[in-house]
Length: 105
Image (cartoon, rainbow, N blue to C red; front, side):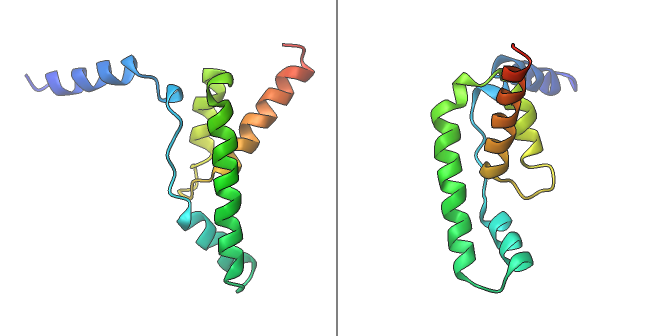
């Protein structure tokens, strides 16, 4: 009976691939960290949040058009350091698409 719960969780994970659903990131920490590293200007954090919002909207519009493998890989990479970023996610997806276009895929 101890294996029933993990088996059920595995079935649910396989039923809905992570790449099918766009990730939801809390970007406040990322913008706070970036702002503290770059400048003491408090207005920079607002600009960072606006950039993240724009990138999120762009990713959301095209999410289903990106290959599942790229979505999964890029979503993981965009939050590797514990500071998730839609800007990083968009950049990764864009670079993956451009690389495939150059290869003629």
